[in-house]
Length: 560
Image (cartoon, rainbow, N blue to C red; front, side):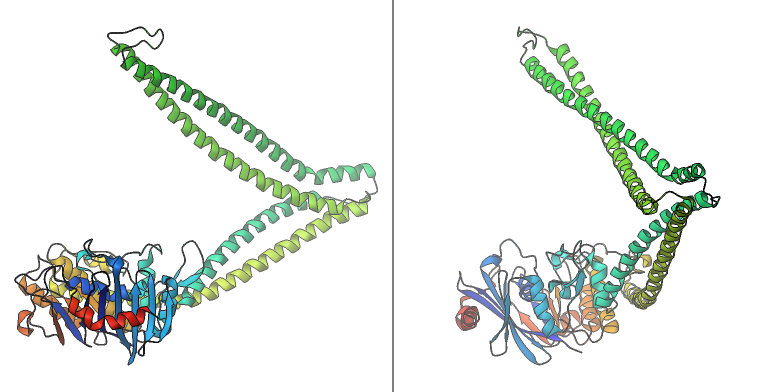
């Protein structure tokens, strides 16, 4: 079991020559300020900067110019210390002696590098590709950070830039819980590929069986004969399939010509309508100036003519829309006919290839042998296709058997998720949240009013409990909750929520909470291991003193 501990956060503004240095302890930490006038002191800013430094993108207020800031985070993983340096898109990781381990400006590469020290990284399929990749590190932190302005129930809304992977929520959760891994995605890709192969082979089998039945019916009554005329008639019967295919192609070709001509005529009509519409619009503009569009004479009352022209304009629009709809319908018909034509062409080629092999010296023995050979080839092909389907079906059964292990893991997770959410809901009496909404981890819900942050917090902590229970060997990241109590939450609920967070966060996770008005254990009935009290002026978290005291580390790490 591994855990990460944030120890010291450095925030530098080289432009202002100011900085802020904040120390944290293992266990529970709270960043607070006066209950009387303690807003806008920088509590949320400190909370945001932690995972921002580690490679996520947080939502900063417009007043905070993030571009000219440099962040350094001193942290510990199982007794091994590191420094993470971030300036814009540049990331550097240093060991405890400030030796460079790596540097990068690419988030996916950052995720790959951090995997080496986390021994954990969420992996997801790339958009529109089959390949699985290590994600940017923000997906590692989704369960561990909550922004006070983005408390939206079961949505992961606290980090920016999460659009890289579509529908990521389910896959990320199951990956954190250990239910999904590289093998799971490999199984799903192979199953999808096998399903497509079976469809293709099955289609070939149906076509081959049709050809077989036709050939079989043609040779069923063939007898050995040296009568040349009878032989010619026999051969003609074998051409019936060829003729039927040719007729089908001819019919489709005729339909295509007809459809394309219809489309061309309508397109010409649409172009004519456009010209007519432009002329009509010019006439309307002329009438608006009380000038006759035909003789350029002045018209005192052009209302009736304008009404007529507007009516014509409306008719043109309606007619143009109808023509465009007709064009779309014709294009769909043309596409359908073209696909049908390709299918028949393929069958014709196949039949011609088979017949070419059999054309030789025309005598009754060779002709009969040709029929039989074609039939035998089709039989062999059908056997090969059947074997291929059996082989693919066997692979499918084996993969589905392996897949059942992952399905069962998901079932257990969802069962436990429901149990934990039910208990938490009852504890806070959240009647507005229906039990059905958390039967699966993909379900959504949110509380109303003062229950909104409570519902969100219990969801996040439930996810952490599931991760601890089902994936205990994975690294434990610090839990950072920015002002979990909003302005609508009463004093009693604030105390209950702080206590709930401290008591229900897995013990191996460091806890960092920001909140206004905390003084001691009596304030909300809960004690924290470390209290960080901010007394600076509003909007002035950074100070000259911290810059003077700690700028040497900025200069040292920046230069490497």
